[in-house]
Image 1: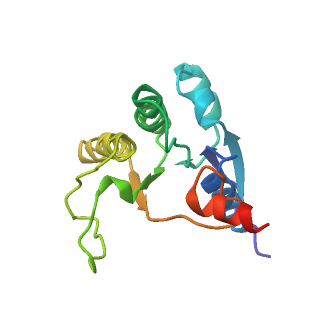
Image 2: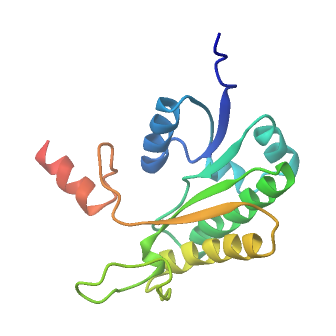
Length: 175
């Protein structure tokens, strides 16, 4: 008789956003239980709230982020939230996967595909704030405090893309 594997739970921050919805669907398809959380609600949350959310989880995925807004708004969503997630992952001994952005690289030469070891030279407050979050993760990993990865996503497109983006507005116009 084969035992079924123990259920796995992922704390998914930003589960209701464009990326989060797709990540949640894929995690569920792979047999994970998704514990959904709002990034905005967690930015100022005390450690006890984070610890409650991570209890019994096997991983944290941060799909939350803000692409536009004031510098303080971008910093809260793209840097402070990452610091909070890192703290929670460290305390719980959980791996963290952070969805970041290729905007960290800035402009790349025509015909050049960005590589993870390319220098980061963001050209916008958004790119700079995402880079700051990635640097926090890199330093925590280098210091051996946590297992984590920051994925620099490029041009995420698909069903449910918001009208706050050029492709989302184009799709809405065609409906």
